[in-house]
Image (tube, rainbow, N blue to C red; front, side):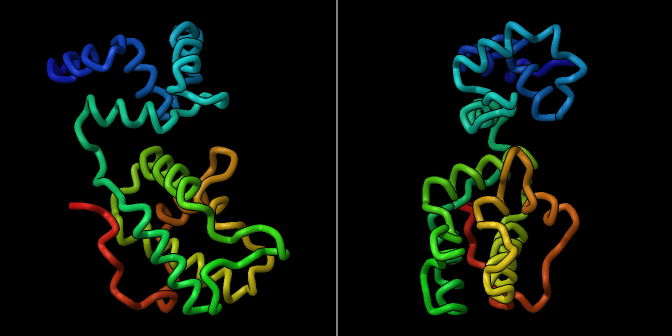
Length: 190
């Protein structure tokens, strides 16, 4: 069964049906089953920055999928969320930023934060904004409690080498109950 609206939107976004299917196959983690049949589309998608060198979808590909399929996610206010994390870190440590080992910023800059978190939210289909926010606040709290020793930088907690500890914790419901008791801000625009 097919959806005529999807076919029209695929055409509007200058994709072929096979390219769209490639994006969906990569998103579902099934490329190994179809790699030989899609080699030309993979090469073209890499040239057009839809997939990266590790054959993962880029933000550009996720944006096209959202255009075709409609908003699959609520849009996140990344700047507001990063400010909330900075404020929380400041209440814990007295500083907006913490230098791990005296040289690495614990919190990422706005662009890196947005790019990584957006990619993880889209790739792993994280739909609960409050849960994502609580996990990030919880991680800041855990890092502070550990005196920032033996913890990853926040950007690596979000995603490192195409793996996301944030997504793993989201799926495993790892939220420390007393980490942050205030009501989360609405960081998703509704």
